Image (cartoon, rainbow over all chains, first blue to last red; front, side, top):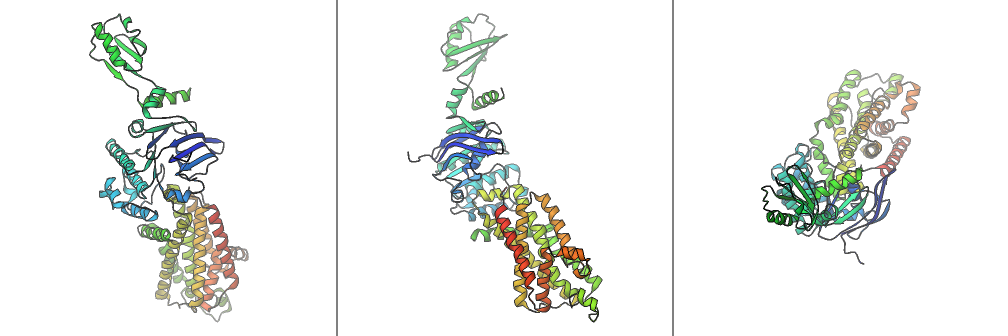
Length: 303
Length: 252
């Protein structure tokens, strides 16, 4: 099959001494998707992305980015990708506009950096030195720099770390816009809400491999399943709940009842309660989020 | 090439904004010039065999003028440049450039040009200051001094690139740079003339690049002569430092 994927990784291996930082990771990123990479610290996310960017030599497996091997065509590739690195800096006294102008001048293809200055809310900081920017402002500058060469693929490694909640939401909108301009986005993140909202598909890293690759919904269903319905009642006799479609188990703690299951569980439980003249004021459903997936996987890991 | 010039331009701007970095390049050699100028002046009895030998046939201020040009090269190459490069590596500045597809030769080339620029401004300051304060003479042969200057300056700049490439971090660069600088300053002929050093010291100074840079510059400047041996030694330092730099330069 000719490579339709923007990125294809097959059995990637990367060792640091005895440590197998990446140990057989396999996944593929489709063109124009926003692809998330999640996993606990030390699970190999950043190392994998650095291999894709050609910043690290691969010890084994195959990597193709835009059809090229980053280990061989690294320099050529880096002109076509954009990278917001997790740990990097600019000279303290370099001004914001100078940084954008410099990186634009250094890349083969470029956008008008003034647009990026405005888009990423750096207009009023254009003459500020890098060292005088807040963490969030530095972060936005790095994202803007990653976009200045009109990249085909953008790698964002913990892009919103250091941003306040408002700025994070703005960043999410802008990432959507980056995708609308035609780019593929690879997003390494610790924020599950961010991954759930932004990503089309997500790879879950654990101990250097990809243990799951799916849509956010798909991952939730695969790892945590349905949801939890909670309510309180003074009625003691609740055995009518047994056999509710989708219900896996229920338990009570004093007046509080917790029912766990999948499918349209809230509606099913509500129907039975109403049929038995019970109308709890606090009946509610808690659907699992990607957070629950993460916590579950992290728990398994520590066991 | 365009990348080199772009980076050079930005680096030069940054240097002007860094007043502390300028101190070592300009203020320190000028300070030494005024101190030693005050001690020795430019008038010694050159009929005296001993004076003739120690001061290489000219007055002390004339002797020191090319020596201080060498000293400026050493301070830029041994202190300023390694500190700059190692700090950039430590802070992740080099990583950013790497990720943006900047070639290693562009980074090295721009640092080299910035280093040469600083050396040249520093050298000009030395010449102007010793002329005004001591009435020293200009070069006897610009045709020889210019190539000697370029060879020496490029060599120290490449030594700077090498130290920046092999030293692990900015603390190491600061320590090693200061040590190398002061050792060279005191025994390579920019402090006491080498002729007054004990024999062991004098022999040891033969191993240092600044010794040969100063001999080379003094010979062209004071006597319109080309010191073949010194120029070969300086060129050897250049070749080795260049090879080590290309081999060991690291982005992080």
